[in-house]
Amino acid sequence: MSYPVDEKKWQRVREMLEQHHLDALVVRAPDNILYLTNYWTMKGYDLVIFPRDGDPTLLVIEPQFREAQRTAWNKDVRFFHFYDAKDPRPPMVRAVEMAVDVLRERKLDARVGIELSQFSQICDRMVGEPTVYWQGYYDAFRSRCREVIDAALDHRERVGPVGMFAARSRRRRLDSRGIADQIAQEAAQLVTSLHHA
Image (tube, rainbow, N blue to C red; front, side):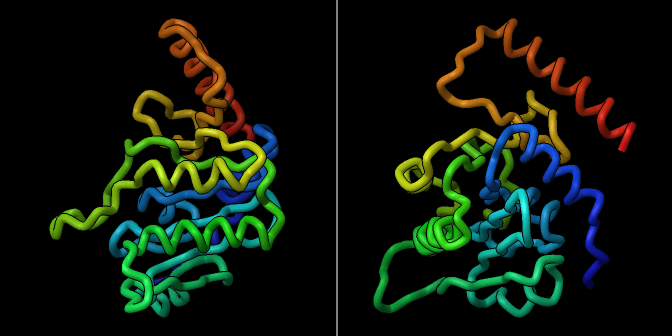
């Protein structure tokens, strides 16, 4: 079932992208993919490139392509092969390469927010598939984007529409009191901005 596009939600996310000077988010956590596209990922390999301007791009495993086209709010839905006889690497590698290509194609590779943690994983974990991302995932974006910012859902950082806008550079270090103060300040700003939206 497809629901109408939540334009207000998209606008709030874009305002936060603007506030943090991000060209785009690359989102991989299934709950964040659902939040941004209305598509429920099957295995946790899928990614969304959510730009500050324009339509998001959803990257899905091939068996889910038609379902994603049918249910996702965005029109730009692309697939990568789940299994490829010529490429024995795991599907997540093909997904990351495709995401980096989309960032380049759309000229969104200056300042990008990605989830730099594993705090949120609500996908199928029954079969033991390796859907938890590895160092190569992070390095792929760091090597091809001018700057990569943490936009991860963290249970301690509920500061964005789904808590994914910690958007602090890893270069910035705060002591535990500073982190708590920063989170409290950002949460208060978010509550105020949402009440006025």
